Image (spheres, rainbow, N blue to C red):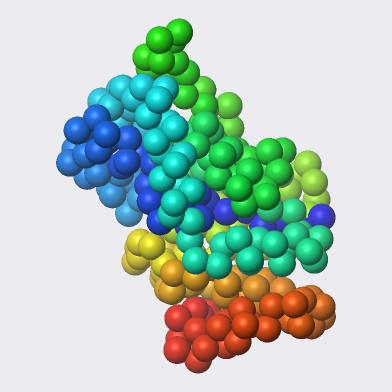
Length: 243
């Protein structure tokens, strides 16, 4: 098995679900400040995860809005890149501190199996009122992605295990993977850029094909995606992804 795992918010999509929820509930200023602090490594995810949701108290219907925003803001070339990985036998997954109700809808659109989706479930009462969350993968805690990826490595013994993400919580997973690719096409974070094995500065996710695939794999799919590989060469020449 060859496994490529993506973060969701600001990696597969050009939005942050928590910030969108905060905007819907008119709590955007305070929540955005807390989110930036966590993503930039100034505080831990576990310290603010509960605090943000208790402040927002989202309604179940709000998750439908977030789901629609995800689908409207898929990152450039994400679908074609994922399709080519799958054609070559790679398994694709999502590891996100975002909310499962929205992440699963995005995954279905991108053709990612529900078996490889790891996110946080929000719980609601019969009228849709917020009751709390279920974090069965530990993703609301610092080091959660690291622990989960190590568990996946132990369970599946993949030939390749790659993580792609934009934030410090993604970067924490680096010791558990064969390759960590930092993604700065939506939001750039200095620590992630400086400590990633490879870093993508353009919005497109297509450079992952150049970074991850070996020469034989590239040859197998190059004829089916010539415009995309030409784009990758142009992005590389412009210095928009590098190690």
